[in-house]
Image (tube, rainbow, N blue to C red; front, side, top):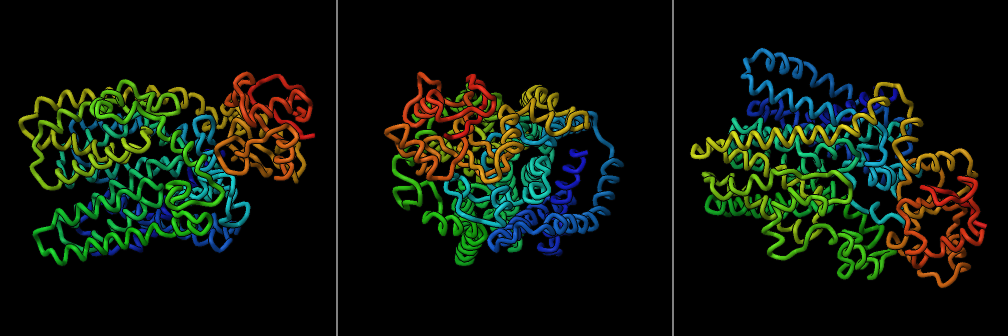
Length: 614
C-alpha cells in the first residue's frame, strides 16, 4: 500500500535524523536529560544536519543519485537500532506508572488529535496544500529533476531557505509525496513534545499537559500538520532553541549554549522570519547575565550570534549568488535583485500587508479578540482558526506574577515576536512560533501562581473545547483521505476527487509531447506536472509581468519563452469582464482561436483547461 510506504519512509527520515543527532551531540549531557528530551534534541539537531547534507548534494549536482533514498533509509535503520531499546524501555516505564484519570483523559485527547491529523497527512497533497504543490515540494522536484540547485527564474520562492524541504527529497525521489507531508507531521509531534519539555523543565511540571493540549488542539496547528508546509518547523526550532538557552542559564554548560545557537541557525534556515530569533536570543543572553562575569557573557553572546549566522548562512549565500540579494525578493530598495523590479516589490509588499485588520494602535489592542473571532482576516485558506488561546492568556499575563527571570524573558520574547509579526505580514500561520511559546508561558503562570488556582478550571475548559473544535475541523479532510489510507482508493482516484486541476494535469502528462512547456494561468501548483512549466500570471516574476500591448506581442512573449501550451484554471483566474492586461489577452486568444482547446475539447469556461498555442 502506498500509504504504508509513505509512513515507513517518513519514519526512517525521522530516525536518520535522530541517529545523526545522537552522534553529533555530546553524551555527557544525557545524564541531565529525560528520554523525551534526549530524543527531541538529538532529532532536531539531526534534522538540520541531514538537511545540510542534502544541501551539499544539491550544490554538487548529485541530487539525482538513486542511492540517496537508500542511504537515508540505511541511516534511518541505524537510528532505529540506536533508539529502539531506549524507546521500548521508556514506553514500558511510562505504562507502569500510576496515572490520574485526568491525565489519562488528556493523553487520550492528545492521541485523538495526533491520529486525526495523521490520516490526511498520509494522503498525497491536494487542495489544502497549495504552497506545497506550488513551491515547497514543487521546487524540490525541479531540483531533483535537474540533479541540484539551479536558478528558477519564475519562482521567487525558490530562493527562500529550504531546510525542511530538503528532508522531502527522499519521498519525492521515489514518488511518495505522502512521505514528504508526513515529515512535517512528525515535526508537529516533535513541536508538542518540545512544548512539554519547556513547560515541565523550566516553568511548572503541572502545566505540561495543558500546554501540550493548548498548542496541539489549535485548528491552525492541526491543519499545518496535515500539509507539507514548514511553519511547524520554524516553531519547533524556536521552542527548542529557547529550551537549550534556559538549560544553559540553569547549568552554565556551554554545550547547551552551542546547541541553542545551532538550533537558532536552523530556525533561520526554515524561513526568513526565523532570522528574527538570532538578535532576540542574543539580547536575552546579554541581558540575563549582564551582572555576572560580564566579559565572558559578551564573548558567549558574540559566539552564539556568529555560530547561529554561520549555520543558516549556506541558504542566504546561495540566494545571494543566484539573485544578488541574500533575502530575495525582500528589501528590494536596499539590495536590488535579479529578475525583480520596484513595481513587483511594491505589489508583493502590498499583498503581504493585506492580511489582518490594520496596523493602528487600536488594531494591536484588539488583536487577541480579532484573532479569536475574526480570524478569517488573518489567513487565505478557509478554516485556519487560531482559537481563543491568546485572548484567554491576556488576563493571565496581566495578573499572574512571573516570579523568575525565565518567565520574564519568555514574556518579552513572545511580545517581541508579536510586535514584529504585527508590523510585517499578519498571516496567522506566521504567528505559530510565538503561540508555541505562549501556550506553556500562560499555562505555567497559572500553575505557578497559587492565587490563580480557581482559574485553572476555566483554562482547562478553554483548552479542551478548542481541541474538540480542532477535531471537528479535521473531519472533512479525514473523511476524504481515509479511503486512500486504507487502500480503497488509488492515488489517481483520490487526486481526481481532491484536487481540482489534477484531471487537466493528468491529461498533460499523458498526451502532451515530451518537449512541451506549459504556461500556468490562474494557478501555480505545478508539482504533479512532468513537463516543463512556468508561472505566467502577473506579479510572480519579471518576464511574464511585461505589459503586452497586443495579442501578437503576448503570443510572441509566450513563444519566445518556448511555451507551447497553456493551462488556465478559471476557478482562480479573473472573469472575462474583470480581466485586465495579459489576463484580458488570454481571453482574446481563446476567442480568436489562437489558443486551441485540447482539454476539454471545447472551451466551456470550466475549472481547468489546456490550450495549444497556434
